[in-house]
Image 1 (tube, rainbow, N blue to C red):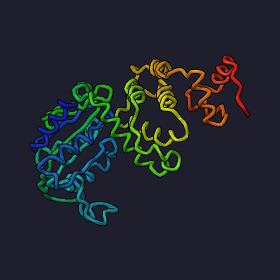
Image 2: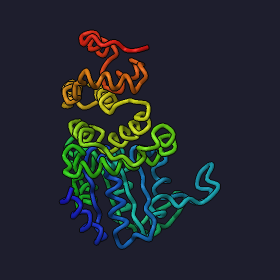
Image 3: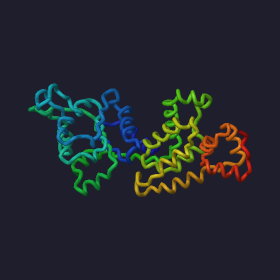
Image 4: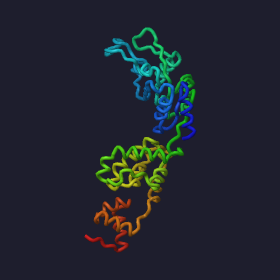
Length: 316
Protein backbone atom coordinates (compact mmCIF):
# COMPACT_ATOMS: atom_id res chain seq x y z
CA UNK A 1 0.00 0.00 0.00
CA UNK A 2 3.06 2.31 0.28
CA UNK A 3 2.83 3.55 -3.31
CA UNK A 4 -0.88 4.25 -2.96
CA UNK A 5 -0.29 5.95 0.40
CA UNK A 6 2.21 8.30 -1.21
CA UNK A 7 -0.21 9.02 -4.06
CA UNK A 8 -2.96 9.87 -1.56
CA UNK A 9 -0.62 12.23 0.28
CA UNK A 10 0.34 13.96 -2.98
CA UNK A 11 -3.31 14.24 -4.03
CA UNK A 12 -4.26 15.82 -0.70
CA UNK A 13 -1.91 18.74 -1.36
CA UNK A 14 -3.84 19.89 -4.44
CA UNK A 15 -7.43 20.67 -5.42
CA UNK A 16 -7.57 18.69 -8.68
CA UNK A 17 -10.23 15.97 -9.18
CA UNK A 18 -9.24 12.47 -8.01
CA UNK A 19 -10.61 9.17 -9.35
CA UNK A 20 -10.25 6.24 -6.95
CA UNK A 21 -10.50 2.85 -8.63
CA UNK A 22 -10.72 -0.55 -6.96
CA UNK A 23 -12.92 -3.45 -5.96
CA UNK A 24 -15.96 -3.04 -3.76
CA UNK A 25 -14.99 -2.90 -0.10
CA UNK A 26 -11.32 -2.11 -0.80
CA UNK A 27 -11.49 1.14 1.18
CA UNK A 28 -12.12 3.81 -1.46
CA UNK A 29 -14.19 6.01 0.87
CA UNK A 30 -11.49 5.69 3.54
CA UNK A 31 -8.99 6.89 0.94
CA UNK A 32 -11.28 9.78 -0.03
CA UNK A 33 -11.59 10.89 3.58
CA UNK A 34 -7.81 10.64 3.98
CA UNK A 35 -7.33 13.03 1.04
CA UNK A 36 -9.88 15.44 2.49
CA UNK A 37 -8.58 15.29 6.08
CA UNK A 38 -4.99 15.92 4.99
CA UNK A 39 -5.80 18.62 2.45
CA UNK A 40 -6.40 22.33 2.30
CA UNK A 41 -10.15 21.87 2.83
CA UNK A 42 -9.98 19.67 5.93
CA UNK A 43 -11.95 22.15 8.04
CA UNK A 44 -14.76 22.31 5.47
CA UNK A 45 -17.59 19.81 4.76
CA UNK A 46 -17.03 16.32 3.36
CA UNK A 47 -20.22 15.34 1.53
CA UNK A 48 -20.53 11.74 0.28
CA UNK A 49 -23.09 10.40 -2.19
CA UNK A 50 -23.58 6.82 -3.39
CA UNK A 51 -24.46 7.36 -7.05
CA UNK A 52 -26.24 4.01 -7.34
CA UNK A 53 -28.93 5.26 -4.95
CA UNK A 54 -30.00 8.35 -6.94
CA UNK A 55 -33.47 8.02 -8.53
CA UNK A 56 -33.52 9.47 -12.05
CA UNK A 57 -36.55 11.65 -11.28
CA UNK A 58 -34.87 13.24 -8.24
CA UNK A 59 -31.29 13.50 -9.51
CA UNK A 60 -31.51 17.19 -10.36
CA UNK A 61 -32.93 18.28 -6.98
CA UNK A 62 -30.58 15.97 -5.04
CA UNK A 63 -27.50 17.39 -6.75
CA UNK A 64 -28.50 21.00 -7.34
CA UNK A 65 -31.20 21.63 -4.76
CA UNK A 66 -34.56 23.33 -5.18
CA UNK A 67 -36.38 26.52 -4.28
CA UNK A 68 -39.40 26.70 -2.01
CA UNK A 69 -42.55 26.01 -4.03
CA UNK A 70 -40.62 24.76 -7.08
CA UNK A 71 -42.77 21.62 -7.13
CA UNK A 72 -45.47 19.93 -5.09
CA UNK A 73 -44.10 19.16 -1.65
CA UNK A 74 -41.21 21.67 -1.84
CA UNK A 75 -42.10 23.49 1.39
CA UNK A 76 -38.54 24.67 2.04
CA UNK A 77 -35.47 25.57 0.02
CA UNK A 78 -33.03 22.66 -0.36
CA UNK A 79 -29.34 23.33 -0.92
CA UNK A 80 -28.60 20.07 -2.71
CA UNK A 81 -25.46 18.03 -2.20
CA UNK A 82 -23.22 20.13 -4.43
CA UNK A 83 -23.89 23.37 -2.55
CA UNK A 84 -23.69 21.48 0.76
CA UNK A 85 -20.07 20.73 -0.14
CA UNK A 86 -19.28 24.43 -0.69
CA UNK A 87 -15.64 25.05 0.25
CA UNK A 88 -15.11 21.37 1.00
CA UNK A 89 -15.12 18.02 -0.79
CA UNK A 90 -17.84 16.27 -2.78
CA UNK A 91 -17.29 12.51 -2.86
CA UNK A 92 -19.24 10.63 -5.54
CA UNK A 93 -19.00 6.93 -4.75
CA UNK A 94 -19.68 4.35 -7.49
CA UNK A 95 -19.89 7.03 -10.16
CA UNK A 96 -19.98 4.30 -12.78
CA UNK A 97 -23.56 3.57 -11.66
CA UNK A 98 -24.86 7.01 -12.69
CA UNK A 99 -27.52 6.92 -15.44
CA UNK A 100 -26.51 8.71 -18.65
CA UNK A 101 -29.08 11.46 -18.11
CA UNK A 102 -27.67 12.21 -14.66
CA UNK A 103 -24.13 12.10 -16.06
CA UNK A 104 -25.12 14.97 -18.37
CA UNK A 105 -26.31 17.04 -15.41
CA UNK A 106 -23.10 16.37 -13.49
CA UNK A 107 -20.98 17.26 -16.52
CA UNK A 108 -22.72 20.64 -16.82
CA UNK A 109 -22.10 21.34 -13.12
CA UNK A 110 -18.40 20.54 -13.50
CA UNK A 111 -18.02 22.58 -16.69
CA UNK A 112 -19.83 25.67 -15.40
CA UNK A 113 -18.74 25.30 -11.77
CA UNK A 114 -22.28 26.29 -10.89
CA UNK A 115 -25.66 24.76 -10.08
CA UNK A 116 -29.16 25.77 -11.07
CA UNK A 117 -31.63 24.73 -8.36
CA UNK A 118 -35.03 23.48 -9.48
CA UNK A 119 -37.27 26.54 -9.84
CA UNK A 120 -34.37 29.01 -10.11
CA UNK A 121 -33.82 31.30 -13.10
CA UNK A 122 -30.11 31.88 -12.53
CA UNK A 123 -27.21 29.61 -11.71
CA UNK A 124 -25.27 29.78 -8.46
CA UNK A 125 -21.44 29.48 -8.44
CA UNK A 126 -19.98 26.64 -6.36
CA UNK A 127 -16.49 25.89 -5.08
CA UNK A 128 -15.71 22.31 -4.09
CA UNK A 129 -13.08 19.62 -4.49
CA UNK A 130 -14.30 16.57 -6.45
CA UNK A 131 -13.33 12.99 -5.57
CA UNK A 132 -14.96 10.09 -7.41
CA UNK A 133 -14.75 6.34 -6.88
CA UNK A 134 -15.74 3.32 -8.93
CA UNK A 135 -15.35 -0.45 -8.97
CA UNK A 136 -16.00 -0.53 -12.73
CA UNK A 137 -13.62 -0.17 -15.65
CA UNK A 138 -14.89 3.16 -16.97
CA UNK A 139 -13.05 2.79 -20.29
CA UNK A 140 -14.98 -0.42 -20.89
CA UNK A 141 -18.18 1.32 -19.85
CA UNK A 142 -17.48 4.07 -22.40
CA UNK A 143 -16.94 1.48 -25.13
CA UNK A 144 -20.25 -0.17 -24.18
CA UNK A 145 -22.07 3.17 -24.29
CA UNK A 146 -22.79 3.25 -20.54
CA UNK A 147 -20.53 6.16 -19.57
CA UNK A 148 -19.84 9.52 -21.19
CA UNK A 149 -16.30 9.96 -22.48
CA UNK A 150 -16.37 13.73 -21.82
CA UNK A 151 -17.34 13.16 -18.19
CA UNK A 152 -14.59 10.56 -17.81
CA UNK A 153 -11.95 13.05 -18.96
CA UNK A 154 -13.33 15.57 -16.46
CA UNK A 155 -12.97 13.26 -13.45
CA UNK A 156 -9.92 11.20 -14.48
CA UNK A 157 -7.37 13.92 -13.67
CA UNK A 158 -5.52 12.13 -10.87
CA UNK A 159 -6.37 8.38 -10.91
CA UNK A 160 -5.34 6.22 -7.95
CA UNK A 161 -5.74 2.44 -7.89
CA UNK A 162 -6.75 1.09 -4.47
CA UNK A 163 -5.45 -2.51 -4.32
CA UNK A 164 -7.66 -5.40 -3.15
CA UNK A 165 -6.99 -6.74 0.32
CA UNK A 166 -5.38 -9.96 -0.99
CA UNK A 167 -2.74 -7.87 -2.81
CA UNK A 168 -1.84 -5.57 0.07
CA UNK A 169 1.51 -5.91 1.77
CA UNK A 170 0.21 -4.48 5.04
CA UNK A 171 -2.41 -7.21 5.60
CA UNK A 172 -1.08 -7.92 9.12
CA UNK A 173 -1.47 -4.28 10.13
CA UNK A 174 -4.99 -4.02 8.68
CA UNK A 175 -6.12 -7.26 10.35
CA UNK A 176 -4.58 -6.31 13.71
CA UNK A 177 -6.28 -2.89 13.67
CA UNK A 178 -9.66 -4.38 12.72
CA UNK A 179 -9.30 -7.05 15.42
CA UNK A 180 -8.64 -4.43 18.12
CA UNK A 181 -11.67 -2.48 16.88
CA UNK A 182 -13.82 -5.62 16.88
CA UNK A 183 -12.77 -6.53 20.43
CA UNK A 184 -13.48 -3.01 21.68
CA UNK A 185 -17.07 -3.37 20.44
CA UNK A 186 -17.61 -6.55 22.45
CA UNK A 187 -15.49 -5.77 25.53
CA UNK A 188 -18.31 -6.19 28.05
CA UNK A 189 -19.21 -9.69 26.83
CA UNK A 190 -15.54 -10.70 26.59
CA UNK A 191 -14.94 -9.54 30.16
CA UNK A 192 -17.70 -11.82 31.43
CA UNK A 193 -16.74 -14.87 29.40
CA UNK A 194 -12.97 -14.48 29.24
CA UNK A 195 -11.77 -11.85 31.77
CA UNK A 196 -8.08 -12.76 31.41
CA UNK A 197 -8.03 -12.48 27.65
CA UNK A 198 -9.23 -8.94 27.03
CA UNK A 199 -6.18 -7.57 25.18
CA UNK A 200 -5.09 -10.74 23.30
CA UNK A 201 -3.84 -10.11 19.77
CA UNK A 202 -4.36 -12.44 16.83
CA UNK A 203 -1.97 -15.38 16.95
CA UNK A 204 0.45 -16.19 14.13
CA UNK A 205 -1.70 -19.20 13.19
CA UNK A 206 -4.87 -17.10 13.08
CA UNK A 207 -3.12 -14.50 10.94
CA UNK A 208 -1.94 -17.23 8.53
CA UNK A 209 -5.50 -18.53 8.24
CA UNK A 210 -6.77 -15.05 7.38
CA UNK A 211 -4.01 -14.47 4.82
CA UNK A 212 -4.89 -17.70 3.02
CA UNK A 213 -8.39 -16.50 2.15
CA UNK A 214 -9.19 -14.67 -1.12
CA UNK A 215 -11.36 -11.91 0.46
CA UNK A 216 -13.58 -10.96 -2.50
CA UNK A 217 -15.35 -8.52 -0.15
CA UNK A 218 -12.00 -6.98 0.80
CA UNK A 219 -11.61 -4.92 4.01
CA UNK A 220 -15.37 -4.83 4.60
CA UNK A 221 -15.58 -8.64 4.58
CA UNK A 222 -12.52 -9.05 6.83
CA UNK A 223 -14.02 -6.58 9.30
CA UNK A 224 -17.28 -8.56 9.42
CA UNK A 225 -15.41 -11.84 10.02
CA UNK A 226 -13.31 -10.43 12.86
CA UNK A 227 -16.34 -8.87 14.53
CA UNK A 228 -18.14 -12.22 14.31
CA UNK A 229 -15.10 -14.03 15.71
CA UNK A 230 -14.74 -11.60 18.62
CA UNK A 231 -18.33 -12.34 19.66
CA UNK A 232 -18.22 -16.13 19.15
CA UNK A 233 -14.69 -16.89 20.39
CA UNK A 234 -15.65 -16.86 24.09
CA UNK A 235 -18.16 -19.60 23.22
CA UNK A 236 -15.37 -21.87 21.90
CA UNK A 237 -16.09 -21.23 18.21
CA UNK A 238 -12.81 -21.35 16.29
CA UNK A 239 -11.67 -19.03 13.52
CA UNK A 240 -11.32 -22.09 11.28
CA UNK A 241 -15.03 -22.87 11.68
CA UNK A 242 -16.03 -19.30 10.86
CA UNK A 243 -13.81 -19.07 7.78
CA UNK A 244 -14.88 -22.47 6.50
CA UNK A 245 -18.52 -21.43 6.77
CA UNK A 246 -17.84 -18.06 5.13
CA UNK A 247 -16.15 -19.50 2.06
CA UNK A 248 -18.19 -22.68 1.63
CA UNK A 249 -20.75 -21.30 -0.85
CA UNK A 250 -19.04 -20.68 -4.22
CA UNK A 251 -21.94 -18.89 -5.91
CA UNK A 252 -21.75 -16.03 -3.38
CA UNK A 253 -18.38 -14.99 -4.77
CA UNK A 254 -16.70 -14.26 -8.09
CA UNK A 255 -16.18 -17.11 -10.54
CA UNK A 256 -12.41 -16.95 -10.14
CA UNK A 257 -12.61 -17.66 -6.41
CA UNK A 258 -12.18 -21.34 -5.58
CA UNK A 259 -13.90 -21.70 -2.21
CA UNK A 260 -13.30 -25.45 -2.18
CA UNK A 261 -9.56 -24.80 -2.19
CA UNK A 262 -9.95 -22.38 0.71
CA UNK A 263 -11.98 -24.89 2.73
CA UNK A 264 -9.46 -27.66 2.10
CA UNK A 265 -6.60 -25.36 2.98
CA UNK A 266 -8.20 -24.44 6.27
CA UNK A 267 -8.73 -28.08 7.13
CA UNK A 268 -5.10 -28.89 6.33
CA UNK A 269 -3.82 -25.90 8.27
CA UNK A 270 -5.65 -26.97 11.41
CA UNK A 271 -3.26 -29.02 13.54
CA UNK A 272 -4.64 -32.49 14.16
CA UNK A 273 -5.16 -32.88 17.93
CA UNK A 274 -3.19 -35.61 19.66
CA UNK A 275 -4.71 -38.03 22.14
CA UNK A 276 -3.13 -36.00 24.93
CA UNK A 277 -4.78 -32.83 23.56
CA UNK A 278 -8.14 -34.59 23.53
CA UNK A 279 -7.78 -35.88 27.09
CA UNK A 280 -6.73 -32.46 28.42
CA UNK A 281 -9.55 -30.68 26.58
CA UNK A 282 -12.13 -33.16 27.87
CA UNK A 283 -10.94 -32.53 31.41
CA UNK A 284 -11.24 -28.77 30.87
CA UNK A 285 -14.75 -29.27 29.48
CA UNK A 286 -15.70 -31.61 32.34
CA UNK A 287 -16.32 -34.52 29.98
CA UNK A 288 -18.61 -32.58 27.61
CA UNK A 289 -17.71 -34.13 24.23
CA UNK A 290 -19.59 -31.60 22.10
CA UNK A 291 -17.88 -28.66 23.76
CA UNK A 292 -14.48 -30.38 23.61
CA UNK A 293 -14.90 -31.15 19.91
CA UNK A 294 -15.74 -27.51 19.12
CA UNK A 295 -12.73 -26.33 21.08
CA UNK A 296 -10.45 -28.75 19.23
CA UNK A 297 -11.92 -27.85 15.87
CA UNK A 298 -13.08 -31.37 15.05
CA UNK A 299 -16.45 -33.11 14.89
CA UNK A 300 -17.90 -35.00 17.85
CA UNK A 301 -17.78 -38.21 15.78
CA UNK A 302 -14.06 -37.72 15.14
CA UNK A 303 -13.45 -37.14 18.82
CA UNK A 304 -15.34 -40.30 19.78
CA UNK A 305 -13.39 -42.27 17.17
CA UNK A 306 -10.08 -41.05 18.58
CA UNK A 307 -11.19 -41.97 22.10
CA UNK A 308 -12.23 -45.43 20.99
CA UNK A 309 -9.05 -45.90 18.99
CA UNK A 310 -6.91 -44.87 21.96
CA UNK A 311 -9.11 -46.85 24.37
CA UNK A 312 -9.56 -43.84 26.58
CA UNK A 313 -12.19 -43.98 29.29
CA UNK A 314 -13.74 -40.76 30.47
CA UNK A 315 -14.60 -40.62 34.13
CA UNK A 316 -18.20 -39.70 34.71
